[in-house]
Image (tube, rainbow, N blue to C red; front, side):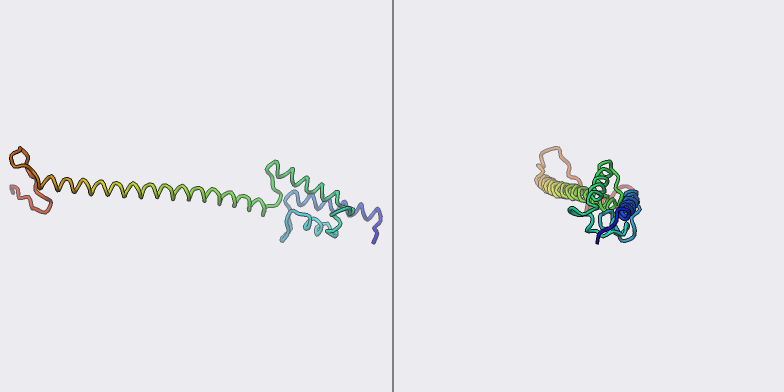
Amino acid sequence: MKISAAQRVQNENRIRAAMDRLLRGEIPPGGNCDIKTLAREANVDRTAFYGTRPYAHLREEFEHRIQQLQATGHNPDPKTAQIDRLKSEIDKLKNSLAQANSTIQELSDFRSQALARLAAQHDEIQRLRTTADPGTNISLLPSARQKIIGPC
């Protein structure tokens, strides 16, 4: 069905008004900042925005304006902005978790090495206590198990 020039101008005006609302971030519930929502808000058939249809130039203009906004760091669709922000936060958290796991592994390795060294030093001390040469000027200290009896 053909539309008159006046109807076409009215449709274009509705499309441009809907385009401005969407690009300001006035996204209707259940919608996005996309052609489907634009067509629904302007009450125009979505297929009119594709190919050689009458409003293809408005689709190109809409997509170009969205790209310009995104290039300047503005995202008219709050859901998309939230998704991008959450993805960025997830990446940061994954990096933080990987770094924490690496630190935990390093500290576990250090703990194991420290315990092994302490055990080796304990064994060496025990060996030295049992092999003390009686001819030297070394006094044996009482072990922790022996009670030290001192003046009362």
